[in-house]
Image (cartoon, rainbow, N blue to C red; front, side, top):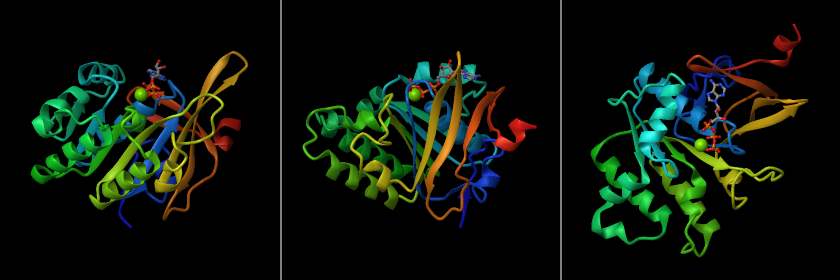
Length: 235
Ligand SMILES: Nc1ncnc2c1ncn2[C@@H]1O[C@H](COP(=O)(O)OP(=O)(O)OP(=O)(O)O)[C@@H](O)[C@H]1O
Ligand SMILES: [Mg+2]
């Protein structure tokens, strides 16, 4: 099975080489746990080091401010291989057909389908998935989520969907179906140890992969993510 590297130091070798190509992963966690940074760093490193083409769709933050935030992390946009689009750019692109479409799932799907007719992408991230559900015109969110996952999988692109969780809520997706529809769940957790917040990364599930079940301490160092194992921390 072909795999896509995460470039998170020490993680790939614990995932049989990376994330299975063509699958859909949820990257989930509460506010500030570095969901966007992690998803972007996967696309960024794959573009720069793996020569794979990525599309990052940021729906709640405009592209300019997102780029700035990523530059602070040392991830400067590689425009040839990595495209960042926001909702305003999508509205502009979809034209009159979709301009008055209030269903964001349909709008983003239309945009991606149209783009894929012209260009090929290896990786796509949608940040956050919750923004697709944000308008009230969605009558059957579970059904629409199902269809969206199915259509995304059919494209064959390796996808990352950012899912926002709330403190105390243990569902990985808003409607409780996403966690079953996704092939993989990468859970980022913030834990308070005395007066310090610590970040952890856990692979809750990853189809076709014999993965570790530990929640690994997660750090961002210069321009990359790194995990530690319990054994290393005890040394
Ligand atoms: N070098 C770094 N090491 C650790 N944390 C950092 C570093 N640089 C920025 N941060 C922190 O990362 C957090 C933001 O990360 P990010 O935006 O990726 O999180 P998020 O989970 O997407 O948040 P949101 O829920 O707001 O979308 C901020 O709290 C910021 O202070
Ligand atoms: Mg974010």
